[in-house]
Amino acid sequence: MSPRRSARGRFLYLDNWATAQTRGYVDEALEASGLAIERHRTNEGRFPSDHEFCGVYVSPSFNGARDDEEWIPPLKDHLVILADAKVPILGLCFGSQVLAAALFGNSVVTTREVREMGYGPLELSRDSSGGDPLLAGLPEAFEILHWHGDEVGADHPDIEVLAANGNCANQIWRWRNGPVWGVQPHPEYGRDQAMSWFDRNAVSFVACGASADDFVPRTGSFDAGRLLIDNFIGLVTA
Figure 1 (spheres, one colour):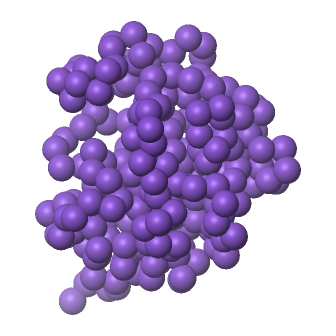
Figure 2 (cartoon, rainbow, N blue to C red):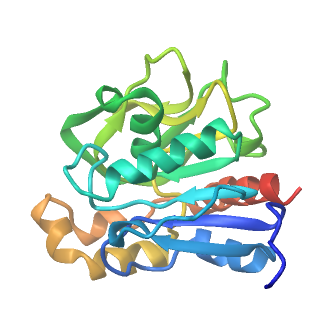
């Protein structure tokens, strides 16, 4: 029997996409990190057999956190166990929403009247973001790719809002009781990757009112997104 791998260096990747998507910077950074990546396709009912990990990534999805899908309740159950064990967790877009629904209940996730899409601003909260390790070195305001029809509320007592904009009062949040972060936008995609993502899903994006122009950054926005992801991986490899 092979020796049991310790939590140190063992990283859990919860892949929530139903179909293969464009590789983003999360994939590149994890591969370069030296971590032992354990990847599970959650929508196929694949979950870890234990919870001894140094960190967890909860990917986006075209599903919603409140959808009636067989794989979503067990995903939430695993996230609660991992969060209670104080394993660092980063959720992006759907990953942020399903984390919030798991920890605080489905009512904390609501559907927006208008989908937020395309590159747009993000502003860090001066009161909450200072000293947060996920946001270390990030500018107070930067442009980032948005694509979401649901969002996590900003007023739950166990949620600390770290970033927002004029369209959404909770763009980045942290759980007050442990190292759990939710990021609503998509820091994992830079210009070329964002366009590839649009091309791969053009029918769905156009049906929601988006165009290719929405996926073209107006500024050098990707550096901030890369830094956020690097900061998280730095946390779990320290």
